[in-house]
Amino acid sequence: MLHKITVRQKVLVMIAVMTSMFLAALDQSIVGTALPRIVSQFSGLSELSWVVTAYLLTSTITIPISGKLSDIFGRRKMLIAGILIFVAGSMLTGASWNMVSLIAFRALQGIGGGILFSSAFAVVGDLFAPAERAKWQGLISAVFGISSVVGPLLGGYLTDHTSWRWCFYINVPIGIIACALIMIFFPTIVAKGAGKRIDYGGAALLSGGLGSLLLALSWGGTKYAWASAQIIALFVAAVVLIVALLKWESNHEDPIIPLSIFKNSIFRVSVIMLFLIGIAMFGAIIYLPLFAQIVQGASATNSGIILLPLVFSLAFTSIISGQIISRIGKYKALAVVGAFTTTFALFWLSTLTASSSHIQMIARMIPLGIGIGIIMPLFNLVVQNAFPQNMLGVVSASSQLFRGIGSVVGVAIMGTYLNHSIAKSLDGLSGSPFVQSLKQSGQSLDVNSLQQILSPAGQSHIVSGFAALPTQARAITTASFNEFVHAAQAGLSSAITNVFFLGACILIIACVTVFFLKEIPLRKSNDHHPVEI
Image (cartoon, rainbow, N blue to C red; front, side, top):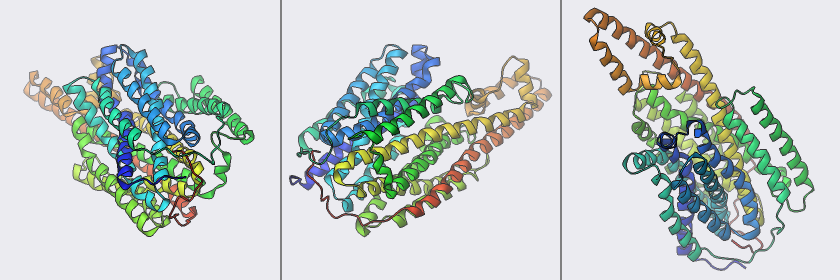
């Protein structure tokens, strides 16, 4: 039977959970600004992508598995295990001595992060009735959104002022505090109503299928061509293993992902929405700083600061929408508003040009933050409200899994489309006198060199090099270079805004899908068999 938990206990537990969630989410983005320094120290440019991919793979695969295990063994045990694994991985990653050890310890971090991701939203369901959950899930979503932007800023600061190793060491003291709070204040309750058998076969097939799919999406168009034998083989392996998983799970007494949950129309609509939002959200957040840097000439630090209005609007709306749902007990109208607002914002972002100001860019980011802030916490609440308490872990984790896969698919689709658009822009610049002079000096023009050339420091360096030329030649060369810069910025602006337009087109599907969402009353109590949490 559920023991009475004081409001103070609940608040302390949620502070610990949100701290853990922040660390796990932060680690997805903090490493980006530290990578150049890490690669330089370890001479590991060829393995650079694995530093990110290793964490992504293990955390995504772990989410559904740990969700089922938390239903069996309880959320408290899984949270403690997740924090300990994450802290251990952080310590070891910070102490890495080469690229191989760094990648291995990042994978260990990912396991801990996956456990924390899957457990955080389920814990809200354990402590609060559905009618109360929205406000807390809104706070967790706000934490997740804030970490997406704080990560690069904090990573850059720590790398510049201390060492890249502190990007990982910083997790240790905070993780220990979060673990202590959970051990002291998180209640333990007798578990009933959840299956106790561990589906090892399902876990193995799920890991293999998801691993193959994520590797294909991460490497396609970057490490290998989409039509290469390696990528095709990974996609084939993913299809075969996922089909085998479906057959296995349909015959297993206690599957790791019960296929019966897909019979629930609320669950089906919710995971489709989370998948589509994942595509659009990560596509936008990744390429907004790119637009600020290479089109508008902002520094790396300033491009992160420019994103703050997006983060603040996302965080504020997540909290407010949670409060609204808790008060009115209905969610479909807000889901419709969130879907259409996000779609409108991406369409509006696609109207940016090379001459657009930072203010114009910020004005378009605010409705994007509002839309995502409404959507992110809402569908986690909707899914939990549609299932009994003893399935809370597995359905919460399954919905987070689809959002995670959506983000990977989004990055892959948007990245391929952007590279194609930029390649066309570079072809259009090939006749420029400045590009011809680059070729004559044995240099090539690609995305990386173009970014360096268009940076304020790069432009200043190139123009200063014209000083040695005679007056007339200097004027002609400077005019030619300025013409190239304007044409390049216009081409890159068009390429990036095309990505926003593609994201908006994808979200039109979400705007149609959301109308199929069935609305059922939010329960005022958990009204479930006693469980261990």
